[in-house]
Amino acid sequence: MKLDLQLVLTILGMGVVTYVTRIGGYALLSRFPVKGRVKAGLEAVPIAILTAIIAPAALAAGPADALAALITVLLALRLPVIVALVGGVGSVVLLRWLIG
Image 1: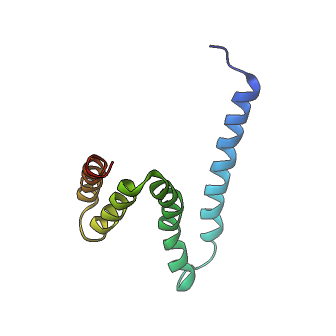
Image 2: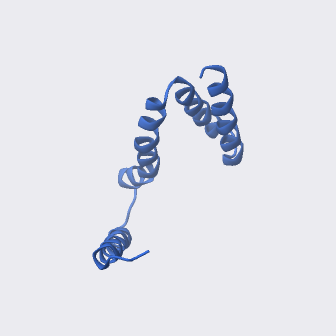
């Protein structure tokens, strides 16, 4: 396998840009007090990103996957993460077998 210099530089560049944007946010926010609505908004970002990534894929995959995603969310609201994970995997397997 031959490595292309442009490919390697592109991957390294993407890594540097990703690192700078992540560390830049922390550096910027460490200079200002974060409280109230800003803090609540920042705490909501991870779940919003996960929802934006997972929901379209689950809904496009079919009714079994969409229902399994809903079951997983409901389990995650009440139970530990590992239980929600196992329940989600189990429900998608069972629903794919039942619904197709």
